[in-house]
Amino acid sequence: MAIKNAYLLDLLERTKKRNPGEPEFIQAVTEVLASLEPVIEQRQDLVDAGVLERIVEPERQIIFRVPWVDDNGKPQVNRGFRVQFNSAIGPYKGGIRLHPSVNLGIIKFLGFEQTFKNSLTTLPMGGGKGGSDFDPKGKSDNEIMNFCQSFMTELYRHIGADLDVPAGDIGTGAREIGYMFGQYKRIRNEYVGVLTGKGLTYGGSLARKQATGYGLCYFTNEMLKANGMSFEGKTVLVSGSGNVAIYACEKATTYGAKVVAMSDSNGYIYDKNGIDLDAVKQIKEVERKRIKEYLTYHPNAEYHEGCSGIWTIPCDIALPCATQNEINGESAKILVKNGCKVVSEGANMPSTPEAIDTYLANGLLYGPAKAANAGGVATSGLEMSQNSLRLSWSFEEVDERLHNIMISIFKACDEASKTYGMPGNYMAGANIAGFIKVAESMKAQGNV
Ligand code: NDP
Ligand code: 2IT
Image (tube, rainbow, N blue to C red; front, side, top):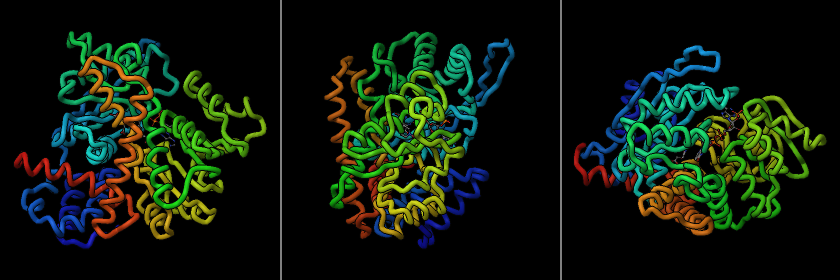
């Protein structure tokens, strides 16, 4: 993924200098700029319009204090973020991550990726991301509500149904979105689709919960078909055991695959008979416990401490659905050695650059995050449409639209990879196809 073009190299150097201490952001920018080399060589007009300089600079970055009170009456303070990255093709759109590792660089990498992902969905959404270093683990429901209300008490002034529409991400599910929505409505005194991933009784969309995991499998299925393969009879690893992982496991199983492992940040379970997803849902969605509890349902399954060990299990298809950089070069080599043929990303940027180089050098099919996991935000876009229409569509209707969007995303990646001389490199295809729409829109709208 080395960049050779002198202009892009210089831009990358300037971006590094301007954003010190943000390795994830620089990693995401480097990957996209490297993919854009063949485009830039043909499109001096985009260089002249300053599109590249502008695309790596967020339009607005908001950092704020989030004070809240814990169950012992003790004041707590977290840091809140919202990065409004790019509004060339629509209102800012992207999730809110609640995890102790959250910092500005992580939110910027996510917002940058989101810009191209949202472009690929075919829907009119710009890129944004937010979050906090708040750790939801071990907090009571009351503490979660206190935090979410305080977070929204600042965030409300920066967002809006036609301005910026946040949603879920790590640590933010329907419960947190519900508390944030309630607080927004109370402060603004208006009932609008300002958040997506809402509960089904108050404006949420059917199939949004399933959308990222299902969409990942729809995309992967297209990629497999285009290369004469299928999910049928394949052994699959799914890392994580949160929203994306659970519904990726469900759809892969429906397609005839056998998912044998899942994980959380403490460790992974291996069940050679195939994961019992009802047990995982009970542990994770209902009880909010650790994946280790799986052994109480299936004592013959194995549990191992440490999450990266999951990649040492032999598989045909790996679906990383936990977090960034969860597959490094070494894990990628082990996957290849054990016969893995496909890596398709549910999480955002789960593969390090060394891991991606390993997939491409060994001819694996590689479904990059910004294309493969776009089903979640695409369905958020469908939730926004339903809210604007004041209608709600059936599960089947939303799921069919999602499926068609994922088919069109695969086509866009495939076609761009061929047009720019890298057939089968869906990472380059996704970066190029996502970029072109945003770049044309930025050029057309002038230097803003
Ligand atoms: P959840 O909070 O529902 O689940 C996250 C899962 O990943 C948990 O099992 C969690 O384990 C694990 N995890 C989180 N951080 C780490 C870490 N540092 N190391 C190892 N495991 C970790 O989040 P989602 O399922 O929503 O998100 C998963 C990924 O998918 C993220 O990369 C997110 O950005 C991406 N994504 C999410 C979309 C959505 O619609 N929700 C859409 C597109 C992408 P533990 O419980 O131990 O923390
Ligand atoms: O990374 C992502 O695409 C998400 N977390 C979903 C964002 C959204 O607005 O639904």
